[in-house]
Length: 256
Image 1 (tube, rainbow, N blue to C red):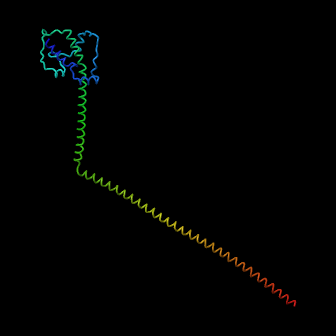
Image 2 (image 1 turned 90 degrees about the horizontal axis):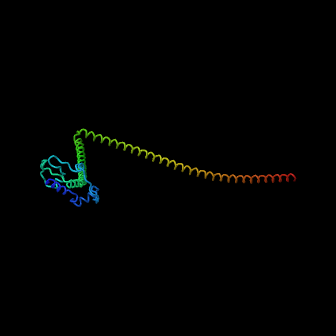
Image 3 (image 1 turned 45 degrees about the vertical axis):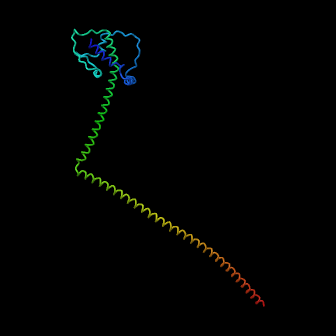
């Protein structure tokens, strides 16, 4: 009887009514612990099979207790009971044990949830540490490989880079020379075209001036021709008149 009373007292310490207010509120908000509902129905009698299923397992010598019970209750040394000293379990004690074991289930769920969260946090921390270690290992490996390379390889790489840069500069210089030569050729061609345009313009001006002088000369010649023609006509008229006068004079002389 003393052993059963001690177990009942320890179980009463783990009852949800004795939890801290903040833990109980957090568990209720997370949905792990449902709010207590008043049940007006009378309790139905439990069968021995249900009692065995609901009660925690019992070892041969001492009853198995939850780790939280071990922390919250004083260490009690249990000794095996002989069959003669085994007390009889009253129906009332069976109901109390069943009710206590049923009330502990939500708290066990909360503990399992907390343990799973802690386990996930530990896994994440472990993964991060492994990733950092791998990165450090890769970085150290690359640095060690670079340091282990012979100086000849480094010098060869530098020489290759220098040659490639020199060839690139040469190609750029050749391209610039070609472009500059092309620009100079275009400028010379432009100057030649300008000179030809100036010569053509001067030739056109000379032709126009010559044409103008030719027109003036033609007009002058036409005027001179007209004057000569009029003078010729006057001269002919004068000759005709003189001839007529001579003929008349001769005729008169003959008559006389």
